[in-house]
Length: 287
Image (cartoon, rainbow, N blue to C red; front, side):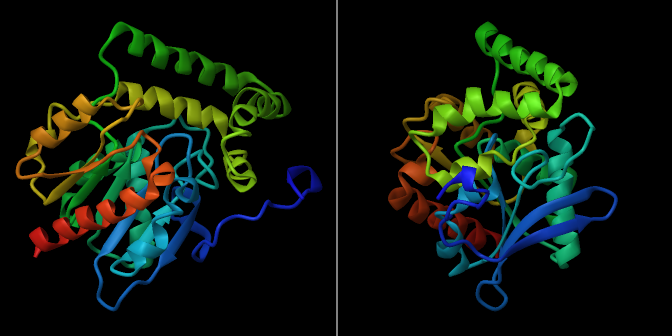
């Protein structure tokens, strides 16, 4: 049984989730686990072209043994907010805080993976009083410096502009032909189905936003306990940039995983315990 039957492929066991209306912003999809009584809240922020489930499904239950866990789909990703506005990482940061507003959560620890790293950094910059600490995984303070990198992100800008003009059916066909088919031999059917939910115009614009992002002018001002989780064989976010992020944040602690950019899934047996240690370090220093 698969996509062509009109039924969802069988996903891994996932925590409860539901659509959530964010006043004045739109409707997103949120998963939550209550965790132990009075536990700190971790706010999971997924990476580019993923969703909360694609990024974090290996981490939900282990984190929930110690924390209240909240995870949302970012704009245009999965079942995240649909908007004709140009994708902005700042909007993603404000969306995540709005989820906590709806749930009545005052303080929380943003846990950002890849693109979620800039979102987490922006949450601190824009909502400092709400940020208990930061956990930054497989991410950096900037993503494009070389001419080749800038041209690559510029190309995403052009594709995003085309996607705004291309009829919906054509966009869906292009998605199937040029993205999902490439993943068919690597991903489980449920993951392919999850990625097929994306608004690819917004996802392409998100790629441009990542290429334009830089926190180098203010990242040294971060004044909350921070852990950085460095993926030591990362072919997407170079290790040297991950290390520079760690070095830029005063009193940050570094944790290392011997894995590539997809270590959260491909090397989960090492990544998940390391993530737990990184979160515990933040909580202990925040007391």
